[in-house]
Structures are given as structure tokens and as C-alpha cells.
Image (cartoon, rainbow, N blue to C red; front, side, top):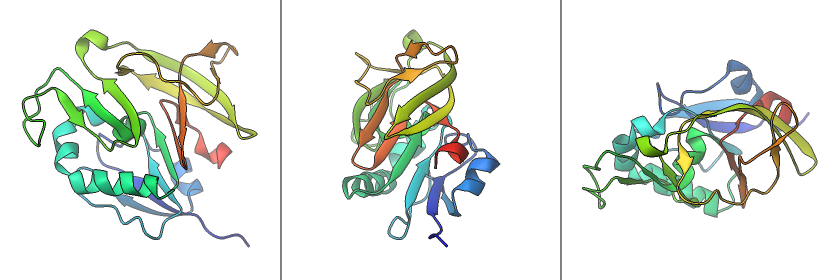
Length: 198
């Protein structure tokens, strides 16, 4: 009998809320933490799962919890396995830029909110950059097929970063949704059907 996967999942009411029960059931021995208020216990886990949600609506709380952000970055740098989707991917990026001015931290007065800094990209949640990205997505990576869907209004600031694989829509047409691989981190705007890909 194989070893049970030990998974830590970011979860709260809104910023990390896009969770399916089937996904939770597929992730083995599961515990939860709230990146807005808690520090994750990362020493004895096999996977950190950062699902989608609306982190752009709770940026000050995420910025305040600097200990959590640093712990996740350190975990990634040590080779810890992380799966991050949409809002979870945004949280792993360098920062999220909005029309609102930051009231806490070293960047107070600016509209740029520092995140974990695992991925060297900036995400725009500004109204001027809002654009709906929606649809079924599919891609191959390391001989495995991943399927899921994309739904978001935020965008990468500047040029779209290079993807490690080509993503396709329901018609089999290529789309410009990037997939990132950094050490043992897999991140994308795509909400994956993890039950099929684990």
C-alpha cells in the first residue's frame, strides 16, 4: 500500500475559496490554514495546495501576514512541492498591483502589494487592465494530461510570461495561458481537475 499524501491547503471564505470536495478527497491526509491570519506548518507535508479565489480583495490582510509569505517562499526554495491555481498563483507572484493604495508595510502609499515572490511576475487587478479570461483548458506536462478551466479578470503586468507547455481550449486551439514550473512548484491561472491528474 502506498504512502498517504499529506497535503496542506490554503482555505478561507474568499481569497482561497475555490475548492471542490472531490479535490479535497483526492489529496490524502488534508489539513487547512488561512494565509491571511495563520502561519503554515510546512515541515511534514508532501504538498502545499493554493487554490483559486479572490486574493485581490484581501490584499492588506495577506501583506500583513509577512511570516506566512516568507514561510511559503522558503518552502518553495527548499524544493517543497506546491500546486497553485489562479488566485493561488497570484499569491506566489512578486506582487499584485491595484487602484487602491496600500496602508500597511514598507510599501505604504503605493498601489503595489508584495506577495510571496516565488514567481517573478506582477499581476494587475487595476480596473483599466480588467479582461475576462474564461474557458476549458487542457495541457500536457511530463507525459501527463491536465484538464481544468480558467476564469479571471486579472492579468499579468507587461508581457505574458513564457509557458513551460502549450495550453489549449475546448476546440483544441492554442491559448496564451502560461503554465509555470519552478523547482517543485506548478502554477497557472487554470483551475485543475486534480482528481484526474494526481
